[in-house]
Length: 303
Figure: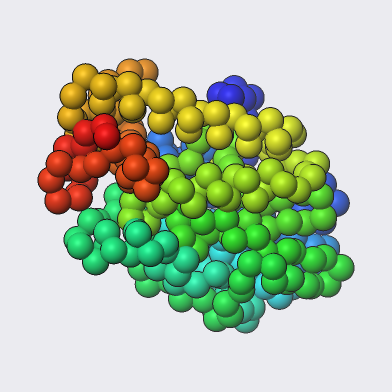
């Protein structure tokens, strides 16, 4: 499940993916965002903009330029409040007059265990949280966002972030960063929660899908195979982590160096956060325990 070598879309250009759905890739490529953030335009007259992206003037202009003279933006929907998805929502709202819809602010949807960890001082890491994000309208799991000839069903899919949502557009699903087209998602406590992530995979698996349109990378033509790969990938990581702990107690960073042998050094901090997410999930399953106060640097042992 590696990214396709031929996914190299033009940046800042609105490409038609299917009738009533276009994609504009933002100019923010990185090891965490692949080619850049995918911004989607839904509709033919009254438009919904899904994930406006980072605070970037060129990308704002690209979105506005994609709105044709007989079109207008009626909704701005943010799937989650990472810095590569949500900051441009407010400038776009000011430019178009459209409201910003989302599950909530950066802490919305955080699980009780992760809230306790945050209260104890565990800080997030990785993609960066848009702490100033505040939607105009709150949407919840099961809500329906309707526009001019289109309908988006809200599916709360926490895990990558507590306020993460996916959006069904008929038998297509805009999966944002829960299911990406180039890599598995980062799950970084206390903002990310692996227990929630796996439950969200099951939620998506329970429905029939034709295609996934992710927040980064190419469309996913076999959604259920991709979901199975994500689950199998996580279970393999769990087994590797438990195997590493069989040799004795270790920190998340020490385990990451052991099990992420093919990961570039620049991505090892993100890998370490993924290991920490697994360790916290394994604590909930009563398979490991921290030997120190729970933190990013704690040593863990198998039970």
